[in-house]
Figure 1 (tube, rainbow, N blue to C red):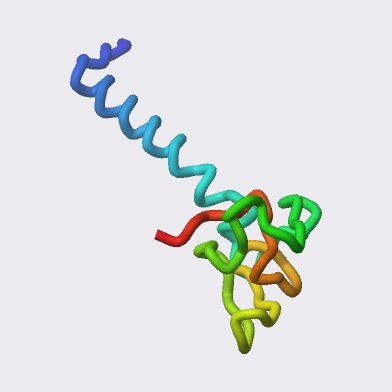
Figure 2: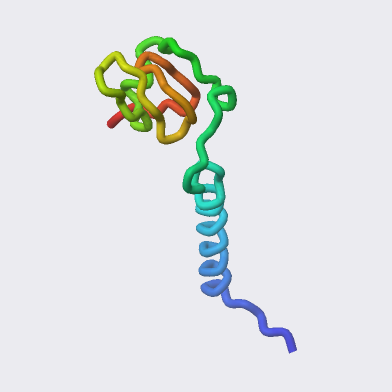
Length: 93
């Protein structure tokens, strides 16, 4: 005998499925894996700014020993110019 689902059960199940679908890409994305960095080519890194947008203003940038020294990035592999730019740019809040 097949039990029908109540509207309340259907809404609860649908909400849970939608929540899992929204979170899954964040959990399983390559950037979420520890130690995985994107290549410069994959994010179109350039060693000059895009207008006022530059790595030194990005939340992912880890500064070097001085304001003009190359630093590193939480997202992109390799040395990163503070005046560089890529598609992973996220302004500091």
